[in-house]
Length: 130
Image 1 (tube, rainbow, N blue to C red):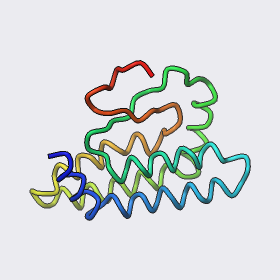
Image 2: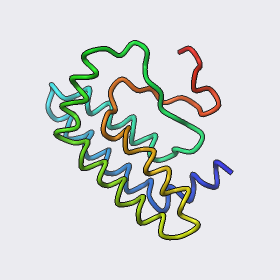
Image 3: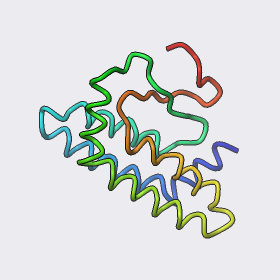
Image 4: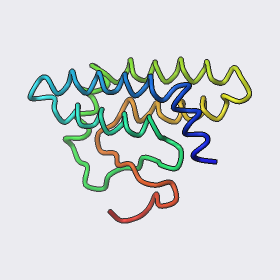
């Protein structure tokens, strides 16, 4: 079921949302100071391409730098990526088949706003020690 949902997701929303994250990642990597933001954007782009069966959890080693970085991220990139997830989620929830995909978009909004200090793990191991 995860594979089927991921394939439908990829066609209807995942590819375009991942392109948005990839563009944000490239822009962030152009400037030397914002390379950690670019890496986070590429990590989330991969998660956005294939979200079913994986989840994001807080990284235990994240500290004050992640909090400061998330504040900067929200101001410069996070808000428009979150708006993309919101618009796509609403559009997908209009149809019955798209409701699980729309809910996944809503699940990705917090991640698009605060990506630093997070880690992508399989859904069946959200509390595994890494």
